[in-house]
Amino acid sequence: MISKGIFGCMVVLVAIQANAQTNRWQQRVEYKMEIDMDAEANQFSGIQELNYYNNSPDTLTKVFYHLYFNAFQPGSMMDVRSRTLPDPDKRVGDRIFHLKEDEIGYHKIKSLTQDGKRLIYEIDGTVMKVILNEPIMPNSKVTFEMTFESQVPLQIRRSGRDNSEGIRLSMAQWYPKLAEYDYSGWHAYDYVAREFYSPWGDFDVTINIDSDYVVAASGIAQNSTRKKNKVSHRYVAENVHDFVWAADPDYKHKVLNVREGLDFHLYYQTDTLENQWIELETYIKKAVPFIEERCGKYPYPVYKVIQGGDGGMEYPMATLMTGHRSLKGLVGVTVHEFIHSWYQMVLGTNESHYYWMDEGFNTYYDDMTMDYLFNENYPSDNFMSSAYKFYKYIVEEGLEEPLTTHADHFETNLAYAMASYRKGGLALLHLEYIMGKDKFDAAMLRYYNKWKFKHPSAVDFEVIMEKESGMELSWFFDYWIKTTKTIDYAITNVAVDGKGSKVELERIGLMPMPLDLVLTLNNGEKLNYHIPIGMSRGNRTLSNGELLMTPWTWVNPYYSFTIDVNKDDIERIEIDPTHRMADINFENNSYPNTNDELEIKGKPEKLENNY
View (tube, rainbow, N blue to C red):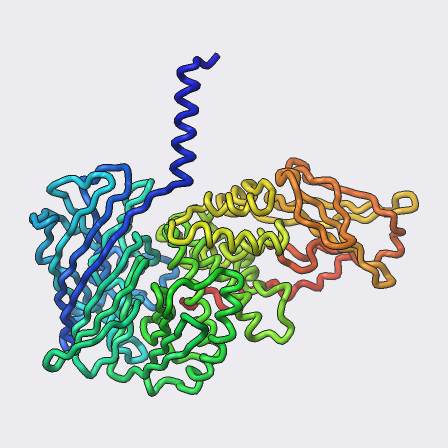
């Protein structure tokens, strides 16, 4: 028997937890930075004033900064990790290990104060731990002031100088950056390879650089001023969680108005494949309304496509991407990075843990948008067939790891690439299959509008899907996200049963799913059946003429039903003929088994992502 006192405490605790979920706090930053760039030496000095708002209920006695440039030094964690993986990123390899003194990257902190008082700090690779003189109390603000000196590394991964296409400066992860603190504590991850997580805020950045450089950056350009042989370029970016810039003497700058309130800025070298960059404008104008209709309205007034970096990488209001590509490749990377404006720049999940909610959601809409732009027969049922093929290959090779693995801790780059991009994208394809397209589309817009600028978690996303669908979906997330169990359903037999036919099915894989089953008669007529899964406590809306069958309970590997159709009148029965479900073996999905799906088999043409 529970006492009234204990029961009362439990009620209060539940109420507090519920309130924390609905009124989640988050930290906020205001950066004001000015740097003086010595382009010839690839070095710069900087001043940073940072207002930090502790909106948490916690008293903070320490803070952490990211010093990303320190990763580009021999012996760094990024260097060692790359040299010990079985399949290192080819762009990194052992290049960091061989950097010379004038090629490495670094941040040297010259001074740091809290509200005017000097602070003690210790640096461990790419993370700086700062012990505060005075605790930061809940719901209060402090000001940190820093001076620093930095060297831009030879371009290896995302950031650096003199990339493979000759861009002088690709300035990503270029400044000492305060780490994120949220309801689970500090997230001061070492910069080993991949993802980022930061508080939202406002940036006011001034870049002093030689006057012959054209500068591209996040945010809105303010009036520039000339100081002797240099120009001061000032940019303001509001409600973002990072800031990127690039500079090159040979940049060509074009402005493309896409719709009222949104301009695309294109920066590329004049010796790049210019005709393809010109053609890119047509595809941008066509892609933007398509994406906004499905993902929500892009909330910023500008987006900048900047040639630079080592592939394609997303930043607030901008992307760095290599430009020597085919037209379709150029369009593909631009579309992919622009969609990151939703998934990651506006929703801002913790990418280290929820990379699949970033890269995966992006992949789903990226593949759909490219299908829209380049496929004469749009929409395709199998627009994510390449993602499925990669997923199947990794599973069969025994390399798959669950989507709960930290982004930096995958045993292979291939496993990470598949998990984050492909399996994450297939998560949305499966939810569309389970919920029905109309409710799924509505749920994705609801998710964006509710959680923009709020750092949603996987649970927050799951709740939206359940509310919009009216179904219990925790089973799907438990299986697809937390395990590596696979889907494999088979039609095992069709037998004569009186005047009708008995269809016998088997669940061979360990992951249960609802099934769409199509029966085609010899005269061409099609009969559609939907078998819901018992755990969903409901089912998607049925299409006209579709028959709802008895739910299949997950504990039972077998299921059968009888239909009033003579066996001799059946031409074909197939489970999920659209292949939206990632069944690991399509060959047993049909009756009679014609083995006509073998084009899905074999090693994918490209296993690594391009970004």
